[in-house]
Image 1 (tube, rainbow, N blue to C red):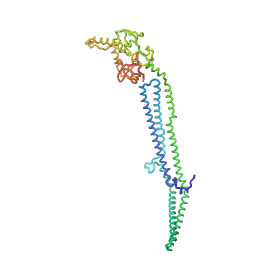
Image 2 (cartoon, rainbow, N blue to C red; image 1 turned 90 degrees about the vertical axis):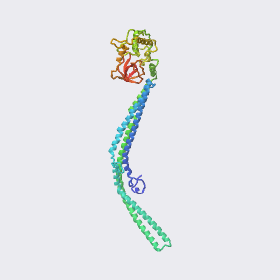
Image 3 (cartoon, rainbow, N blue to C red; image 1 turned 30 degrees about the vertical axis):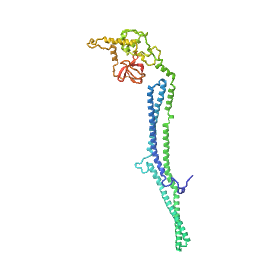
Image 4 (cartoon, rainbow, N blue to C red; image 1 turned 120 degrees about the vertical axis):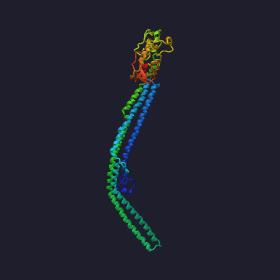
Length: 475
C-alpha cells in the first residue's frame, strides 16, 4: 500500500513525516550506544555465573574426594567413583575457559566497536552521542521549510473554518430578522449586509487556504527526498550495528556451545572408561588379600631358649628369629647393626597371602606369650641385682643401655636433611619408642631407604623414627 504526499496532510496518524516525529529514529542511534553497554553487562553477569558454577564444581570434587579417601569405598569402585569427581574438576576448567573467552573475545570486541562507532557527548542535551545529535540536526534542517509551510496551512485552514462559522451564523440571524415582524426594515438591511460581508470573507480565506495547500503540496516531493536521504544515512548506520550485534551473539554462541568443545567429549569418554573398569571380582580379591583370608600370617614357630636374647631389643630378637629357615632359634648370634631391624618381609611368609597385603599386628611381639613374659621378668631381675653405686672404669655410673641401644639412638638422630614425601596407606601404632605412629592418609618424610628387614627411617611432625616400609607409598 502506498501513501501519496497529500495523504500526509489529512490522515491523522503517528507518521514519520509529521513535524518532530523523526526523533524516534534519532533516539535509536542513542539506543544502539546503550545496547552495547547492556550487552557487555549481560556477558559479565554470565561470566560470573560460569565462575561461580565452576567454583562449586571444584569445591564439590574436593570435598567428596576427601570423603572417599577415608570412606569405605575401595579398589576399582573407588577409582570409578573418583572418575566422576574428576569429571567435575574438568568441567570446572571448561567453564572457566568459557568465562575467559567471553571476556577476552566477545566483551573486548563489543567495547572496541562501541568506541569506534560512537562518540559520547561531554555535556549531553537530550542525546548521549555525537552521532545522534548530528542526525537530529540533519532531520531538523530537512524538515524546517516544510514545517513552516505546514504551520501556514494550519493557520489558513483555521481562518477559513472560522469564516465559514461566521457566515453561517449571519445567515441564521438574517432569516430570523426576515421572519420577525417586530424587526424594522433597517435591522433586516443590516442583517443582509452582514451576511454578504461574511460570504466575502469566507471566499477570501478559502482562496488563501487553497493557495497554501498548493504551496505545500508542490514542496512535498522535495521535503520527502531530503528526509529520506537523512533517514537512509541513519538506516545504514543501524544496519551496520545490527550486523555487528548478530556477529557478537554468534560469538557468545561459540563460547557457550559446549557440544562443539572437543574437551567435553574426551571428559565423558574417560569417565565412561573409568566406570567400565570397575570390576566386582577385582574388588573382592583386593578385600580378601588386604583384609580377609588372603592376608599373610606370622604363624607361631618353635624357638629354643637363648640367654643372649636378654640383651637384644624386640625388633632385633624378631630379626634373629627370622634368620632361621627351619623355625629354630640360632643362638649366639646378633643382628647386623648396619641396618634397622624390622618386621619380617611380606613375601617371606608361609601363609600363601598376597605380596601386596599390608603388615598385620601379629608381626609385633605377643604380650600374652610365655616367652615374652619370661624375658621381661629376666630383664627386671638382672636390673635389680645390679648395685646402685656400681660404676664403670671411668668412675661414672653404669649405663642401663646396651651397645645396641646406643647404635639405635645414633641412627635416629635428625640430621636436618629434607626427605622424600610419602603417604600412609594404613594406620600404624608404634610398638617401640623409636617407631613412628601415624594414621591412614598422613603425609610425612622418608629419610632413608628400606633396609633388609623392611623398615625405613622417617620424620613425622619433627620426630624421627622407624616405620614399616610397606605401610606407605610415595606421593
